[in-house]
Length: 127
Image (cartoon, rainbow, N blue to C red; front, side, top):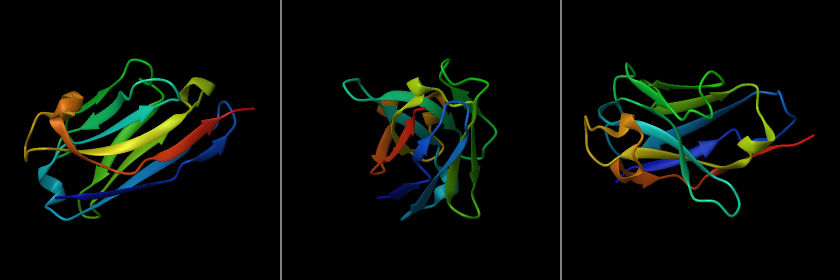
């Protein structure tokens, strides 16, 4: 089982940037695709971004394309989400997730492919 701990959330103004981090432990991080999801109040959890185990393949939700960038540092067992040009509609709890299987297809962003989740970090975009 993998443990995931997110950090970096906070309260920012529209147009600002934030970088979320997710530190993983408990299994070979570099073998697993990773993803970011978010859940706004009263809404279902939705896909944001995902990255393959070696970092060469990335996928984004249409709502964040061109503004958010997912990356990973396998030497540090950490995945990042750089969020630029933040909008009020980006307000949500952001969750880091790890693929159920090594070398799996989680990088496509399908929630069912992810079996381990962090506790979430709150991002609030408000003026």
